Length: 273
Image (cartoon, rainbow, N blue to C red; front, side):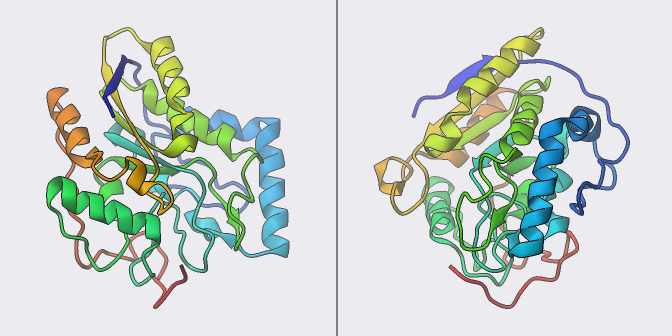
């Protein structure tokens, strides 16, 4: 797919810790706070948190409450170099831990992530590790963001349309307004619908001629990967765009033994598909 670019600029200062909302612990100190804290007073947020609280009282909900905001915990706004958008968390037992497409070390690697590993090898020559933990990417400024941050066990998209998308649109817009070039990787039709949001946020904030890059392709799921995801070279193309913009490339290699307890939860010994 061809690269799509736009311009954006705006500066953000760091602030106080992001609030703990309805039992979902975010980060202790973060520069996301001044950008997102206004959302917590809006009616949709109160309705969303009531919905999630009610769901947790009646059903199993993933990820655990203290990992809902893991993507923002691990990747500061001013550190974002790449955004990879997912749809909603994995809905199998012990899979989701707050990072799009990622699972804890020791959990069976889902099919979409296996295809991501395959494209990683074919694109930049990195052999897949024996795990699906992508925390090392998050710590380098790769924002692994689902557009819905919770899901009921066994029911994909069960928390879609409840308000999370309003919140994560604010996250996406905040990144698009940043004064440094960012690469947005949009896999599948759901993610690709965010293109206009990115362009609009960038245009509204543009004053310095900063160029973003948008990379689009089919989703890595087994149903779509052979329709254009394989061979799309998102990792090398993202790094080429970053280097061309004067930013450091991402080290896409994945350690063989990630620090699985790094955000406070001991990994399970096994997981489900």
